[in-house]
Length: 61
Image (cartoon, rainbow, N blue to C red):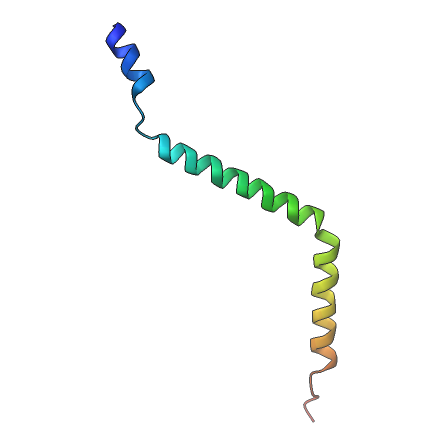
């Protein structure tokens, strides 16, 4: 029984996947926080691009 307990502590299989999962989770949370923080600037940028595209499009005459 004591050997099985030692093996559980020493066993490192799956550790790499767990670390990758944690890193991806932190990156995902960081991306969401950045998008929320920059929401107004992103919206303004998209609206400016849209306005410039529609204003500079030649009419179909």
